[in-house]
Amino acid sequence: MRGAATFLLPALLLCALPFYLDAFWLRIGLFSMAAAIGAVGLSLLSGTAGQLSLGHAFFLAVGAYGYVWLAGEPGPGLPPAVAAVLAVLLAGAAGGLFSPVAGRVKGVYLGVATLALVFLGHHVLLTADSVTGGFNGRSVPPLELGGFTFAETDPELTVLGVPFGAEERLWYLGLALFALTWFTARGVLRGRPGRALAALRDSETAASVMGVPVARYRSSAFVVSSMYAGLAGVLLALSFRRVVPDYFSLLLSVDYLAMIVIGGLGSVAGATAGAVFVTALPLLMTRYADQLPLVATPGSGDGSIGPTEASRYLYGAAIVVILLYAPDGLHGLARRTRARLRRRPSVTGPPGTGPSSGAPSAETDTAGDTATTARAKEHTP
Image: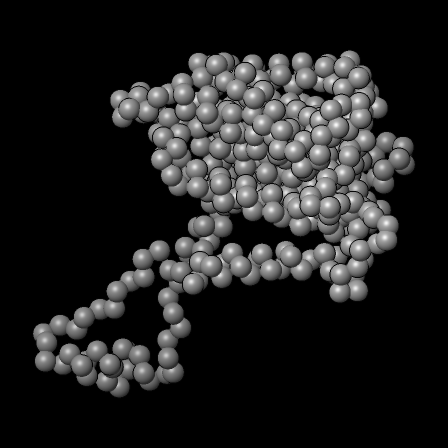
């Protein structure tokens, strides 16, 4: 019952937010949910399986552009829901094509190999004009499910007196996709695949002795991570409503690495926390740049630090602090804090009722005929 309430209360709160927040805050939430989906996939690959990847932006681009091309014109013009599913599968297929490399290469060598994917993908996005739109990108067709459109409609939809535009509608789609990601990823981590990947990360020799097929699990982790990235790319495309090649650059891959390091490697909750931090910080600093010291408003051109650069400095400093004082990230820090609070001794009763006073205690009354008094069990953290 307590576990169900732990998930039910935050879910109800998140479902109620579109009735109270304006479009700016909903957009931050949408971008954060999309980033969290991609960060969970990278955390499975790098945090659990121990495989370094710098090519996450490539698979996000495959998901985003795959949806735009499959559902748009020029393109097959498929139903948007079918196009979204096929785009995720297309990202998984791209990961499958690269999986033989991921199954045999590890560490920094795999990082360099995936780095090539980002440069290759960016070149293709710029040159394949008929599919990607070139430098200017392409507009994103709205998603439709059962006749319901996740975009502005005429007449306007109103729920309980609140107008529901594109952000409000996409909010619930993002929540559903994030919930799917959360529970499937936790199922993987808690099941046999998660234990096999963790053993593979700790020691390949020990894992192979225990019967874990090393190459197969490495390749599978890469494919699953690519599918999560493709799903994140679809949600990002729907949120931005236009995709351009410059967004899917090496900086995006570095941002995702920062997310999982700050949040905590190998943790779904940690990846989510890191994604919210890295995604929301530049957007908030851009909005409140005129109220922040040493930060210039966008387009001012006075030579000061812009909000985007300032946010990168801040979460770069956060990475250094995390690595020095909390190597397991925000998730590990929160876990240790909860453990300390649980171990804190309870407040004693009124004066004169404690064991140091002359008043008889409950233990001595009920166990006075024994030689020693039983001590209360210490709470196990």
